[in-house]
Image 1 (cartoon, rainbow over the protein chains, first blue to last red):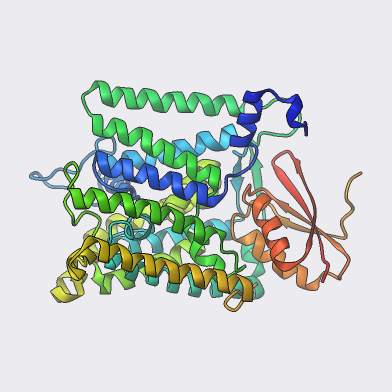
Image 2: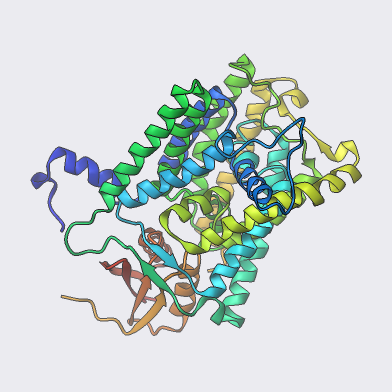
Length: 404
Length: 78
């Protein structure tokens, strides 16, 4: 029911501002960057593919198909691995946010779409392991970590996105039946009367706080912090519909620049925080954290494969997690694809691939070391982001690279 | 008064970017002045379709919600 603000209580107005409408993506970007800086202070920056890899390794171990870990270095259980916990709590956070905004529903896509989700997830699983990162570790956290490999990985992502978008347009023309067929939606909030969804969302938040208290009571402050920050990540992603696929895809599709600018805002805020943490050597981290040894060949190959996968699936690792929390079955299939492909790639494909590469093609390219100063490295990243900004804005005005 | 649509585009169950891709395709064959009703279950469509309309100069007539389905009415202006 539309009501004027004068008739609403102050708390009702606050609730509606939080949950009646999605937040702008740049608000999400900045909030996620603040969370990312906090996470780095606690232990390490934000990443997602490491958590899904750990899920997969534990599942393969428990099924007894392939075994991971050894006697000297046993595989951490999902409850003891910070990024496993992170992925699970992101799912919980987005689920809670979707419930609180009455946007949760189990949405069964046509079979063709669910298969696309699975294939996209499989490709992302391969790309994330070959490229040693996903859109977060190799882009949203990788730029702030001042890693030149992240720039290469991101160029790879954009190339993959471009080709996969051509594929989607071709598929719609030639095989429109893939995205048609039987669909079903369950458990939606409905529009008549009161819904219990917001209450369930609040209960989930309380459950997450109990999980954090449990870790904290056991003396594990790091995991307790990870639980709460990851819950925040999932919550913010759902409310702002934070999407790295859209940031890279829209310039080639609708021409919209807002998603890219949302990501830039997050990268800028994150970069200043990360630069200070690394420069001052705050906490336990070293300078080389989140500077992956993937410069340059694994970064470009992994980036292209990941970019193809995330565009076909309609969400990167984080995008799949928060949309799965909102109830999209296609993105559940994407997570299953990653869970299958990541451990297999890590065990059988990545080791011989890296073995065969000369050291010059798999180095850690840390820009402050390469240019000799932190301000110099930050300045170079600012120029890269400015060029990116000019491109997406110019393209939005001219539609030069936009397909629709 | 309910909005009358000339054509219906069923995107139920689909997630981003399929509804927008299908909308763009359907608008090419819709006559100027006619109204398309897009059915979507993706909450993203509530923001994506208005953004696409203002970008491409089509008119968004309204968004209705019924039992988890968003009905988005778009009029082709050019």
